[in-house]
Length: 222
Ligand SMILES: [Fe+2]
Image 1 (cartoon, rainbow, N blue to C red):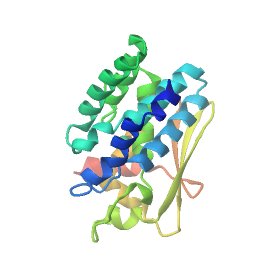
Image 2: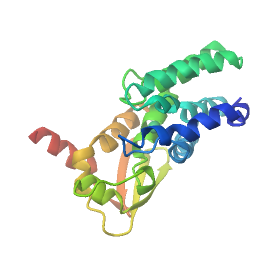
Image 3: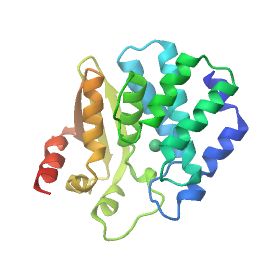
Image 4: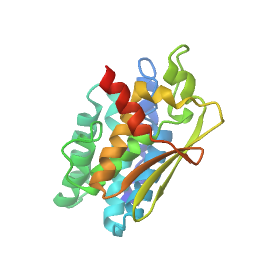
């Protein structure tokens, strides 16, 4: 089913058009670059926790379609993506129980609330850790998060029996205190890890840093 969906030129055209629509107001890429990275992260998580081929395929389909509603703007995009996905997957003949898992994962992906499946938890995890400079379509000078995220070259993910390790690879000039202003990229993966029965470990260039304490400390002060 995944192969069929990936070959659908109409779906591909919509995803390729997402960034043209949201570039005016938003800085985060929701187009094909982001989608490809999220698909890879979801696969790494689901393979790493020992899921079967079918669950991994549902995860990849969820990742591929999760932001498609952003073609009409970011506001409400998770709902629109889920509505589109429901209609589309019915049209191509996917079984109802599979459609439900994917639709639910996409509808809740922004907040990662109301979890029902490892597909949903892995999608929210993957979506949030895509925070490297390639995620950004433009940078606004003077905003610490924007000034710093330029220095994130990529984000590597490793999953073993105990931990999901997020390794933020930088050019050496990244100031991680900027994540206090964008704490969901740390808090949501940590929450999702619990559902996936793993600890979430953050590293900067391979060195473990307790980013969760750092970003939640800031939140307590607000
Ligand atoms: Fe996304």
